Image (cartoon, rainbow, N blue to C red):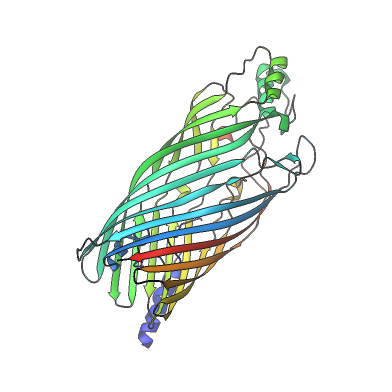
Length: 465
């Protein structure tokens, strides 16, 4: 028993002490799921772990994160020459996962299919706060990037020690983005190009005048295909080691439509001061290339004593390869519609989880899980639509076997989030209106303090037949 306990401690410490490098990685299913767990969520965590199941099983998981966020911009409103009021955000972020696994009466094969939403990012800010135009409106009024993944998979048990699994990842990417475009700045560009010898910054109009805001909408959808695979090793009855890798759909082309609704104040001003310039209906077609990151999941689970399981899992996503998500304009009615930056630079993303669970009664399991995700995106690319902070989550939960074929799990998680003070940014007003700014970074400084609070509630149903 001492050797067993010591070995358990060593394998857990070895994984937790390994060098980590990478924010926002996804854990699938309930808090009891992982790359070494025998439930139907394994089709997404690690398809090889499906061989731990017998018969037919289904896993239905539904979670909801309650997010509250405050942003206080530190730079002065150039139009009113006053401090912007604090912008407040309240939003609900759903988390859905479905898994189904069956052995089809075969002893060594398992077949499964899973569905989840690994990426669901965005924010919805109000247009005004305290009667003033919101400090966030040029970055987002509403924005959403969602990746929907369906994975059919098959697993094969080579022997009692080793199992392998492979899957096909079908990814659907949806982009929705609504923001204001500052046509005070656009008109200044028109003026400078009309008379370059008399070009001045913030002339003839001062930036960020709400009367010259134009609502901009970008929307699109795309589909891609990738592959995944995994292995499960059970060297001892009380020790399981799992690993999986998923290539994702890699580059998914999202054909997008862009429209800009000009206010009458802009039409009248241009008609009066630049009668030779016609303002057509502003619309464009573009392409957004969404790069789905390579992901790796590793896990170790041990049973040092009867009814007790300890586990460590590590999930990494190569999000640095998603260096930016650009909308490249291909067909436009006006040069006033330029390339759009939707999602900014991301760091590689890792999530490290520690889990302990104990079977108190034959029908009751209680547990706790701690997750660390200290990989906030670089400061220079933080904006009100791409908010990211270091994240730590403590989860408490219980699993109750309600009937012979149904187990219900309920859990609550609290995030410990660190506020961020943004003092530098790659986004800045263009100092020379005669020259277009590369990749659409010509926006107000998104400097200031971002503070957020998040709690998560979840319920999952496990069916076994």
